[in-house]
Length: 499
Image (cartoon, rainbow, N blue to C red):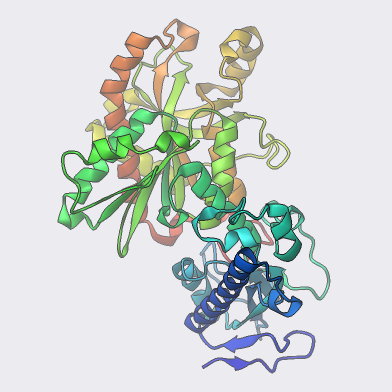
């Protein structure tokens, strides 16, 4: 039963409804969001077909729902080691919500401890934030909606307002005004909707298909191996997986995972998309996504900015690197324990002097997975798997500046160099997503073993399948780790309650 709140004056208003349980709150969020989207779609349809201009009263209903949690304890807060679903201080916390049906399990996970352990009270109502019309259109027709130009639609319908979309909460730039509510989540509804559309654009897949365990790679050959592995899992009824959603609009199910399935995936128009993605999922279980981010820190930052709004459990970089030590061999693995960040793309957001700590659970899972897949133990594993610092550089031809780079590489004791891992780790740190990197040595530029076509092809055929299997095995280990993966070392002292 939902009832209008009768809380203290100035705290609650007649737009808010008290929700006794998280389930009630989510049901109310779903109703309000569905009503707002449906009403705006009706008005858009009428405007496109007949030119009927929406009335101000109609536009006032096209707003995101608001979720509010109030925490007013009688004593000290409960002690727990969890890295999320906890209040930093007493007060009122708010956020706007989009797509509440899709985010329902996440919201339940966050709200249940706040209610049961902290005694928080929940309320749901209508916010002041309008839902931009591109986010309610079916089929992603943001540019025209028929023959009507966007400028004309913008006269009568809400449009994305970049001034109201940002990462100030995640970056610690927001300032709390006395008497104002605290943020309940890192990202509000306009920021989430902005990124959901970008995910579709860059990956060529529905955002709903993205899984909470994400592997990043920088080579198409890893995609081929992942697709082959995923099809094999679909053929196994005990795996729990029932479909592979591939970039370009192809879906392979357990029933269609035949000998031509991989060819259908490869024939899809995935090349139209900058960072094609592939998602293996099943009803009632967490799945795995693989995203080919290509080369460079710009791509790495771009896609992680957007995937972060889905609040994944973990993302891992499984790609190639240059080995910097004489003792390394082509095909050896490097487990990044630290990063010398020369990507430069995040310097203003996470300055290079801010340390990016390794996540213990991720490191242990990657090392154990390497042992399981390779069969190596002890000294044999140490010879193939080295831990240390990875240099992430924004210049693919850094070798041409060797006389300038040599001293810094020596000072850092780096063991490898790439163009993405440090960016992905820094983004995980910044956006509170556990991270890690297991790289495979594909060349040794300082020691005369450069990447030539013949040697590279032999390396690819030998190493990629094993490397990908290690990444997948690490994910499977992490899936069993529970809440401990969400390390408190990623949490700020004034963190919003939601992870």
